[in-house]
Image (cartoon, rainbow, N blue to C red; front, side, top):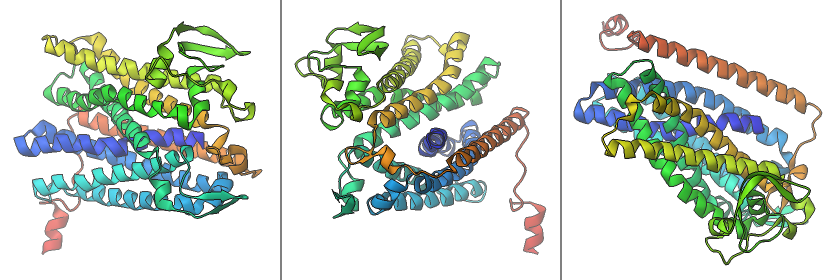
Length: 440
């Protein structure tokens, strides 16, 4: 399931952030009569449709995996988790319907009406992601039920859905989606600029998503910091793993890189006192160590620590990349003319995706050995089917096929656009022979 989630989460980011970017360029085209902006909106909407179709398949696979791979979770806790999953399904259908209307509406709807069809699609993407994040936040902050002798009673699905951790976790993921999509899309146009395509179309295609990415990358450390401040009270073992704290320290150092080997910190750098300042907002508050947690309740420490630091390190680099661009522009320096910066912008897309995956590894591995923190262990929730390896093989084959298919389709679309070829006309477009024939 880690494979499925790691693959699907990138597509989920596009479902959350891409419609907002399409809305911005489409609105600019409608309000200012900007032909380049309208062309970007039309092309991006087709890319969005391809990614949405693939995401629908991968999301369906995930829904089956929840029941097949985790019967010990979905069986007892189905009543707790049913509400957010139901709302997520409704949001998916709303998004699909309005994506279809938007794609069909080119040349058929009034410009402003057509633009407004993006709003339900944007809202549905946000609602759907919130519902999924509500489930994950509940797994980290379980509430809305009583667990007595292995039985789940007194279920309050609303309390479970709106648990204490949901808003911060949702904000962290929502902002992260704009980081990933913004840098990914701007990176595509940075590659075009590197190849000498310095027309206004490519510059606008770079600037719009890059603005989103920069704002999100600068906001993300603040959201992540506030989210991290809760860990000392809610998940001290995860915080200890993040900070690589073998024992409780006051004040604690900040450990950059490194691993714990036989209880000793090696191959990294320690900066005195900074760890307490970051993790607890105070030099006077301790960072709990792994010695406060029973050995059988500790997460895989080194993996959690390295994943967390990869997320933070890459996020810092991405924020610096955006800040450098706007600082240089303020001083009259155009970095879009500098090939070294364009190469960095191209690399930012994959790096943003790696940071996202690292963040989720830190979150999920850091919760171990619990699937529902403090209530249900992962070993108790997992299924024991002897056919699990066949399921994994099938998932790899399906996802590999979808990946290859997506690359082939998107590259084909890009080649046609670069060649200046127009899209094939719709069979029911105004002036088409089919429409004229049907009107007789």
